[in-house]
Amino acid sequence: MSDPVLVAKRLRAGYDGVAVVHDLDLTVDAGEVVALLGANGAGKTTTLLTVAGLLPPIDGTLLVLDEVAHDEHGRGRRVRRSALTRTWKRARRGVALVPEDRGLFPGLTVREHLRLARGGRDATDRAFDMFPALAPLADRPSGLLSGGEQQMLALARALVGEPRLLMVDEMSLGLAPIIVERLLPMLRTIATETGAGVLLVEQHVPMALAVADRAVVMSRGRDVVSGTAAELAARPDLLEASYLGER
Ligand code: ATP
Image (cartoon, rainbow, N blue to C red; front, side, top):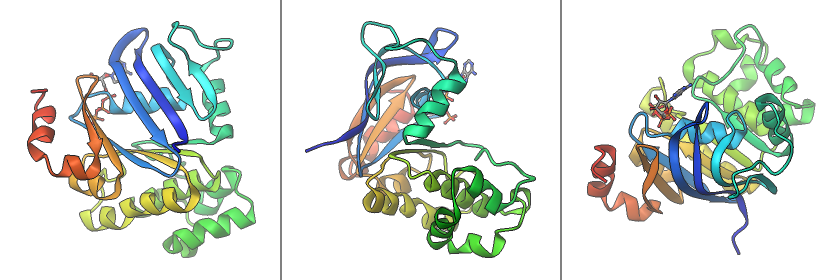
């Protein structure tokens, strides 16, 4: 039986009440990897920010873990909260977002990032088990790490909080393909081993489909194609048409 950690139905989201995401249907189950694909400006990052709580939904239904974040009657279930409070509460309950810019503090060391993320010594050791390349860099400021090492740290920081929903925005940005080939499969491992649902925004479509169970393609704020990763990998024509805005 499916156990959703994220359900969006007819979700509208955007900025200052102006929607850039329209009628989006999206689910992520526990232990599942879902790739959110689409051309630049399709609305992928806006979707992640809304699920994380950094943007309020405009309309539609949004269930994040066991919280009704917004219902179809167009109102937040509880008192309207500031974005920071909303995001903090969701993070405490198990929502983690690795943003496109990785969100690291250049002056803080690797170990300090992991400690700040509620990671005691055990959690820090587990992070080093998962990313052994970080262990010898524990006392190095993140600003002095390579792009790949920074991405590992951003992921490790998200993982020490033991998320139930992990969202990763363009992990491959600025990384050599060989590094991406090593890092992306880790998301599959995380989903399988921890039971977290993973929502992955990625421009490297073949690599994303290789690790995902399912994919949803967005175009101009709408979900235009969805299916299993295998189905979509077999239909490059569909993918191409949605990237070109022809669907
Ligand atoms: P990319 O792959 O280029 O990162 P994306 O699919 O993640 O694109 P979004 O960043 O979600 O797309 O942007 C969707 C739309 O929202 C775009 O038209 C963008 O210009 C607009 N947008 C993004 N940020 C803001 C903002 N802060 N204020 C107003 N509009 C914004």
